[in-house]
Structure formats: structure tokens, C-alpha cells
Picture (cartoon, rainbow, N blue to C red):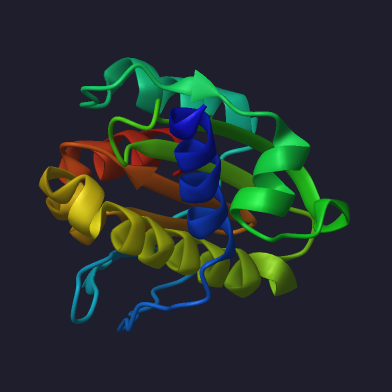
Amino acid sequence: MKKLIYTGAMITVMALGLTGCGKDEVKDGNSETTTATTEQSAVEEISEEATVADVDAKTVADALLAEGDFKDNLAEVDTTMALTRLYGLDPEQIEDSMFYTNSQATAEEIAVIKVKSEDYVETVKAAYETRIADQKTACESYLPDEMPKLDAAVVYSNGNYVVLCVSNDSDKATEIIKANLE
């Protein structure tokens, strides 16, 4: 019973934390990649010529799951629960989405969202940054070995797509995302 209460408390802390990460952003054309770090984010430039492929969120998320470097067995998360509880987003603003999250043993996760309007992209990116910060707070003493993954979390946007990937290899994750969305 204590374990269940503790797990519930951890989920609540992760979902409701209101801390933020500082970040620097560089935009080129319609795409942007941010790798989160404790102090500030390192940003990878994307070609101005980048065009967004018309692909569903599940395809991108499944590619990350299959080809990415994860030590945990990630599980699919209900869309409404992920949007509202994990990210605090308005489901009415979302055209398509897919989420995979960890088993509480790691900080690994995948979130792929296609928004209805590019006006909502910054809101989703801010929600991802908040999620990363919440995970850092939760993992700091509970799962300290997961901190490097969170420090290198990939937040990528291109057109109406916004992707979050926390994995063992952020470079590989970025490569997979670009292969599917550019």
C-alpha cells in the first residue's frame, strides 16, 4: 500500500510541478530542436529548407521506440491522460498525438504532438520543458542516474509537430525525428 501511495505521489509531483528550465533557442525556417540542460539548452540548427512531412504522430513515436536507445520498456499512455495530466495541454488544440512513458524505473519517454495551429507550438514546447523540469525534481534523489538523460532531453518542433524524447542517446533520437518529419 505504501508503494502505491508513493507511486501516486511521484506521478502527482511530476504532473503538477510548476518549475521551468532556462533555454536558448535558435530558429531556422519552420523547425527547431532544443536539447535541455540544467543551466541552459543547447540548440541544434535545422535547415531553412526543411519541410514537414505529413505523417501521423504514431509513426514518429513508433520509429523512436523501435530505433531509439531506451533501457526501459516504454508503455503507451492514454492520450487524454497524457495531454491533461502529464503536460497540462488543451486536447481541443491537438490534431494528433502519441505518448510512451516509463515504468517508473527510468525517466525515459516519448511524446509526439501535432497541433491544429502553429500558434499552439510554443505552448506545447513550454509544457515539455515543464515536464522535463518536473522529472528532474522527481529523479534528483530518487533516480539520480537518470539526470543525464533529462539534461539531454530532445524538444523538437517543425511546422505543427512538437516532439519530446528522453532517451539514452539524444543524437540518435534527433536523427530519427528528423528522418520522419523533414
